[in-house]
Image 1 (tube, helix red, strand yellow):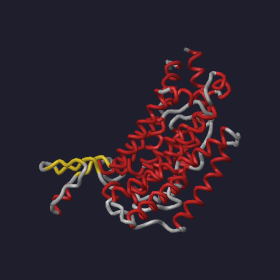
Image 2: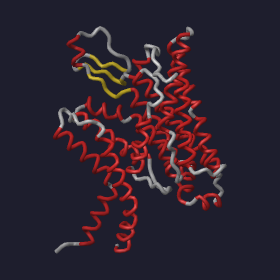
Image 3: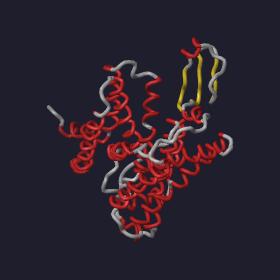
Image 4: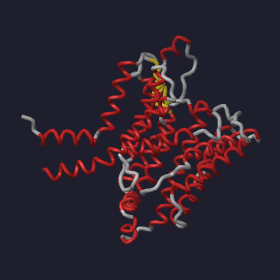
Length: 359
């Protein structure tokens, strides 16, 4: 005889953890049908390929939890990348050392990147402009300024040492012979280079350091509590003493900061700055947040869920490449996953509520 209560409980538990099950299912599927998919090199490729989406989605998580949305982040990546690259090239050409030029270029991009976030937050919080309109307007403004800065062409000629940072790894291991930390081993033969194992990309380390810091802020601090409170009920948050307007401005600045950081990571990875650098990743970032469990109506979401959502997209992207399937199919798959995630968000609370009533 079927135990309907037990079956319902199992179904609810699966529904609650569907993104983790989906991620594991993806990895298993591509490991079976692909070639060397479940290898250290390929797993690291997934992390590197997911860098932009991970960063954009982390900042977007804060905004979506408040019940808003930031559509400017795609071209904020491009704006940040051309600012960073332009400053690096100009300073290096002017005679500054490579480390100084690189550091100032990074800081300039991150600081200037806060301005669009402040403007977005001011428009939304102070002038009550709908987030969609405010951030979509900034979407175009950021792209326009980026094109002006780079004169409609990608910026090249960056400091040569930038590649060792963007393409470097935390560890280098030659089985049975040596173990190197941070620096590429020197004086290796071609045969030894074939067996050299690179472990943990630098860009991945930087990405997860910032994600970890802001995950703690969202989950364990008063700032995070206020973020959830605003998304849950903005009027109740105001009555509870939360400075909603100031908080929203900070939230949009966080989103802009992560978009700028993604632009810097783009420069480190590709040694160039391009105005449309992150435009194709806007949808992926929003999808990662939603499939990670955040509600578009606000008040719900976690950074951990967002990370899993971003990895789902990264695993799918590299899996399609591994199978030699055109990557434009990724957009179809991501769109389908988004629709499914929204349906789960819409209907799962009702199902869970029914489960509690039966229990």
